[in-house]
Amino acid sequence: MPQTSWLLWGHLLATVVFVGYYVILATVVIPAVSRVPGDGGAGRPPAGPLLAAIERRALPLLLASLAVFLATGIVLQNANPRYLGLGQVRGAWAGLLLVKHLVVVAMLAIGSVLDGFLVRAGREDSPRAPGARLVWTARAQAGLGVLALLITAAAQGA
Image 1: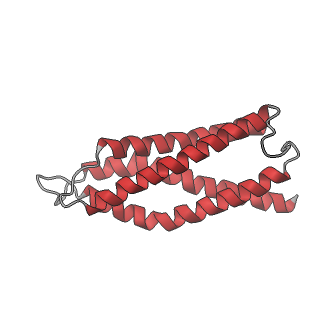
Image 2: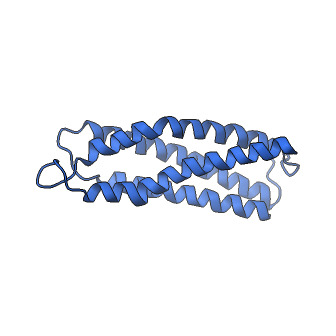
Image 3: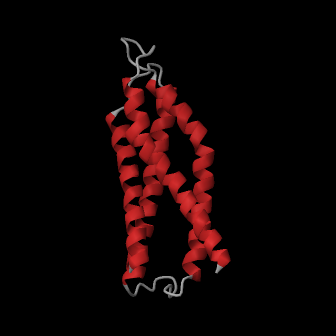
């Protein structure tokens, strides 16, 4: 059981890093960058290059946390006596875990789209405030992260 405790700690830490980044990006970084005066012309901030630089800096941490999250999640799931095998969805715990996995897959897809928006924002010739698609994608990613945490908490009580 002590080994499972370390795995759970790693899983939770990776989750905090992964989900926390997107929540902070959507609720703090993008709104702040959009309002900072700078040299983007007409008093607008150089938002695109700044957001791209933040993403480049965060990407190794995000990828490492994702690797830890997935690896520990697989081991923890297989170690749980309620896990009956692939495709065996019986009971509230297994149902919630299935929904959580679908949310995580959606997060991976949206995260890829968001990363593409951020990289393209850094290449734009005329820096400007983040576009609506980038803002809504970041909000969706943060919302799905919070949903995954809520589902995890519900599954622990099931």
